[in-house]
Structures are given as C-alpha cells and as structure tokens.
Image (cartoon, rainbow, N blue to C red; front, top):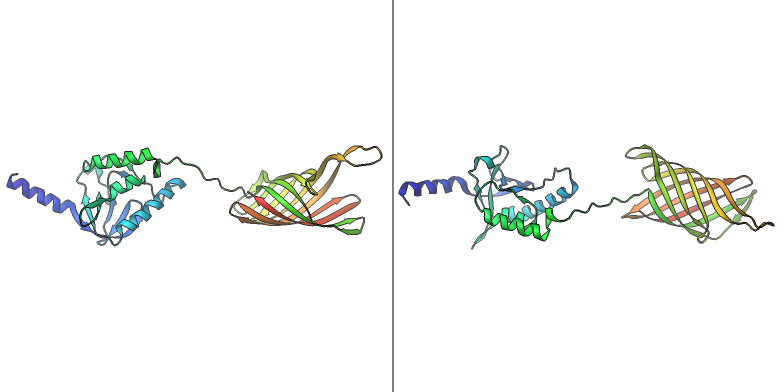
Amino acid sequence: MPKFLSCLFILFSIVYTQEIRVIEVLDANLFKTSDSTLISMVNLEVPSLNDSDSSRIEIAKSAVKLAKLNLLKQKLRFEETYKNNCLEETAKKGHLFRVYPLSDKSINELYLEKGYAVYIPCDTLYMDMYRIAGTQSMNARRGIWKPYKEKRKPDWFNRFRFSVIIINEYFDDDEYNTPPLFGLNYRWSDLIGIVQNESFNFNLSAETGTLIYFFLPYINIGSEVRYRYFYGRIHYDVLLPFFLFFENDNLDTIDYWGFDLGFMIPLNGKGIEVEFNSKRREGFYFNYVTVSFAVY
C-alpha cells in the first residue's frame, strides 16, 4: 500500500473509530456518552419508548434493559459512519461494540439477533453480519417478528358472577329471616352508554341469572350510575314463568322494582362485589345483602 494511502487509512481510523463510555440510555437506540455526545446505532430501525403502539413500547423497554446491561460501565468501541445519507442531526450514527479481551461483540448485531430492530441497509460496513442476524431473528419470530396478540383489557363492568345472598325478608310488615342463598348471574353494566367519561358513567344496564340455589330464572333492566368502582342501579325485574301452585296450576310471572347500591374490588381479572339490594312490589318488599365473586 502506498505511503499516502496508509496515512489516509490511519487518519480515517482515528477519526471514525473511538473508545467511548456510555453514561445514560435515553431510549432503545439513543445513548449519551461521558463527553455528552448523543450516539445511536446505524442500519437499525428500533422501536421507541415514545411510540404510540403498546407492543412496540414493550419491545423498546426490553431493548433498553439489554442496552443498560451491555453498555453502562462497560468498555465500548464506536465506529462512526462516514455515509452522508446515514447521518442525522440529533445523534452520531455508527457501529457500537462491547470490547472483550479476545473479540468485540457488536451491539448492532445483538439487537438484530434479539428481534429488537429491523435491518435497514445504509452503511455498507458489516452488511453480511447484520443481514444474517436479522434473517435468523425473523425466521425464529423473535421480538418485532413475534406474532402480536393484543392483550384483552378486563371488562370490569360486564361480568359473570357467583352470588351469595344474605336475606332479611319483609312481607306485609312481618319480618322473616332466611338462611343464605346463592345463584348465578351475568350483569351488563355498560349495555348502552349514555354518559361516559374516565370516572363517571351513566348507562342502561341489564342482568339475567338464577335465584335460590339456581332456581327461579330472572331478568332485569334499568339505569346504572357509576363513580369509579361505586355504583347504584334502579331496575325493573321479572321472574320468568314458573309454576305457582295455585288452584288452577297456571304458568305465571312475577314482576317488581329493584334498587342496588354497591362497590367493586377488582383483583387481576376477577373481583369481589358487595351490594345492598332492595325489591319492591305491591303488598310486600324485601331487602338483602349480596356478596358476589365476579369473573371479568
């Protein structure tokens, strides 16, 4: 190699290759060095902590953890790109390596191997290495390439419930106490939204289920006012047709008005609900307390 070219190569290496120390991981692909320089890895499209998509944010969080483990307090080497089309104003772009005694580990390649980045060719250095790492990650469906399954947010207010009913009954001003009863029901608190915001809701709600050891099927419909996890309901109930053993053995229904006042305690997709319930019909009324175990 001519002496001029040798000097040029040495000068090029000094300018574009340097040992650095990362003192802060600002984002999945944005790092601050000890001399307050911002750097990022070239040839990579990496999700950001500021993305609007929740799945990309989770990948960015994993990348940040990996970066903190491999960059902070470690000996690093940074090869700044010389390609004008790879440069940006906010940070220096380049190839980042963690320095080991026998060989250096490419952090660019590590991101691609983990599926934390997509390979976008720009700088021609290490192209084969990056392409192989990106292809292997894609074939293994890691990180970005993993099929996205949207996490279902629990629907706190449309739920299946197993209810234990502690009853104090009143018929024509005569009080009767009964042992606890239980039944199953499903309540649609958000059947039709009327007024809805972050904490206060006013909706049309409905419920169907069974009373008294899974007998006496019923339905009700009415309005519900809710503030956070406290709620009140006014509803019209109908016990579905069943035999009332009158003289003519007729098939009949019973209807009445109901009022519920309660609160919810959500617990990781399940919960406990405590309610005071009051039923009203001409000639009698009864009050009781319900403790329900709900699945959202």
